Length: 92
Image (spheres, rainbow, N blue to C red):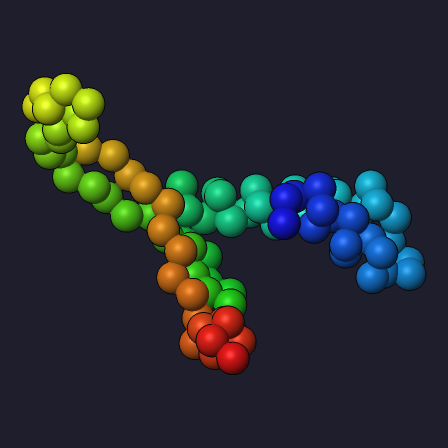
């Protein structure tokens, strides 16, 4: 499901919110999660999961086409850990 499909689905389920209002809500939620990850404090949604930032160390990478070794710099990556309730719903 893409973001536009999510907005459309939520607006169809709501009898009081317009599509533009749902779009604003979805954008605000995504921006808040992004800000939480960037700040390093993360975001936890009970029953769904948690979003955090993980640090990847610098390493030597290998180009699969040429076999050439290159230096890959350190970087921060977003990380999602699903909650127990989400895991149970997906597995049933």
